[in-house]
Each structure stands twice: as C-alpha cells, then as structure tokens.
Image (cartoon, rainbow, N blue to C red; front, side, top):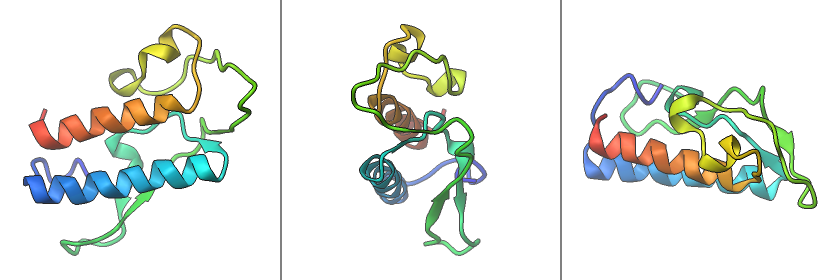
Length: 109
C-alpha cells in the first residue's frame, strides 16, 4: 500500500502520482471506469524503493458507455467526486479521486 510509508518527498510523490495518472489513463483508454480509486487500492509490487504500483479492487468498475449518465453512488467517502453525490457522473470521477490521492501524498494528511 502506498499509505504504509506515511510521508513522501516531493520527488517520491511525483513518481507515484505519475504512475496513478498512467493507471487512470490506461483504464479509460481501455474503456474502464474504476470508480473506487484510493490509496489502499494501489499496491507496491515489491518492498524496493522504486517499486512500481499496481491498481487493485476493480469490484465497482464498469465499462464506460459515453452515452450513459451514471447515477450509482459508489466509491469511498473521502475520495468520492461531488458528481457521484449528485448522481450525474462519468469517467471524470476517477480523475477527482486521483487528485485527492495526490493531495494526501503531498500533504501527509
């Protein structure tokens, strides 16, 4: 888990953020909306310092239908986008959740 370390330097946080952006991009490119991105759903492949991340827990994910407006209230409370609570969302909710993760990594809170 990326939360196990606690605090990160700017450089370390930037590397993790880059990997998370790549995960979101690849998921969306492949037509998948994760819908539950949070630090606990990213695992380090090994204990080595530069270990790559892997996304986990695709239990709430769906294949994206651009014509559909998603109305399900899904995700984890601290990372959920406002659009989810308004019951009018799409793949942008993954971008919001990634942004919250970035904030947590950089602020340590």
